Structures are given as structure tokens and as C-alpha cells.
Image 1 (cartoon, helix red, strand yellow):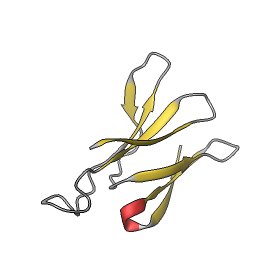
Image 2 (spheres, one colour):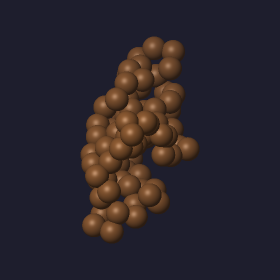
Image 3 (cartoon, one colour):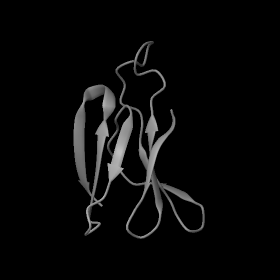
Image 4 (tube, rainbow, N blue to C red):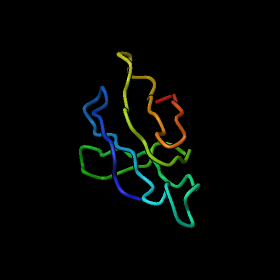
Length: 83
């Protein structure tokens, strides 16, 4: 996997999702193996979801900052998680 899409959260931290390079073909075509990460002020990364997907896009946060929304493009699903 590789970094794909990112957005700054309401606290100013970079949140980015990953991309499964093989989601279109190959042995792992249907694997949900990408995660969501946050880059902290000390430049350490932490995984913020225990859920896996294939390719995150359009990460966004409501004004309250208590949720994270994103879509998994290959499956055409939109997700919302507590943040």
C-alpha cells in the first residue's frame, strides 16, 4: 500500500489514507488492506482506525471535528467513524 489522500483535521494534524496498489488486479485484488493514519506534531504516525479498506478518498471532518468521513473508491462506499 501507499499514501493516497490526506486532509488536515480540526486540530491541525494531517490525516491520510492508504491505497491498495493491487485493488484492480492480482492476488490481493479484493483485499481490504489499507488503513488511515494521523501525523502528529512530533512527526510520529499513528493508525487511527481498526477498519481496513482498499483506497481512501475525499477525507473530511464536520465543523465539530467529532467524525471522520471518507469513501472507499473501488467499493463505492462512504464511511463515517467517530474521531
